[in-house]
Image 1 (tube, rainbow, N blue to C red):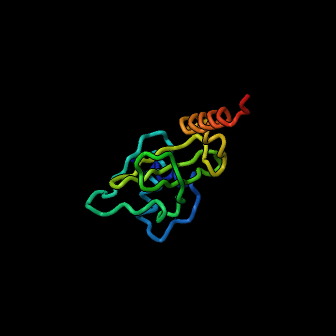
Image 2: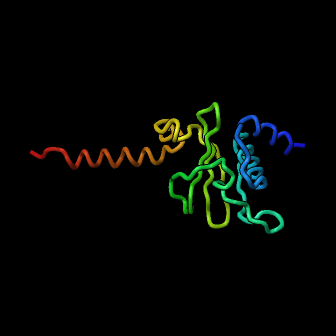
Image 3: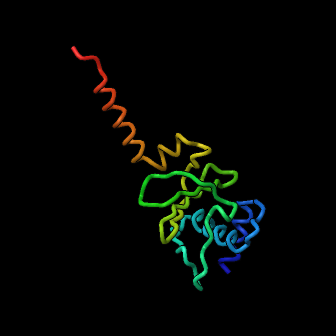
Length: 139
């Protein structure tokens, strides 16, 4: 029963055409629904019955992106319509980890950097401050 509710919610949130491979679309649609609801999502690249979980790109929902290095192979993002939020799928060799960013970097890049990626912002500001200090005029 929960899955049917999730599918209905996602059909309302992600109002897009289904890809040719309905199984892959449905899988990533459901994964995105769990993430949007704030649930932690990790999906094995080999799903039940040994079939492969297609790439997020094959679903038609996600586009290739970049993310903070965590040992991943690729990063994938999908905007949440009528929202500044974005679904972020991080691809590792054996699994995908999916979460929702408060701000999709393609819509609100500065806010994404501040609120969703504070460590990277702090590093960038530190490097900038050191560079300014080293570049100052000397007496």
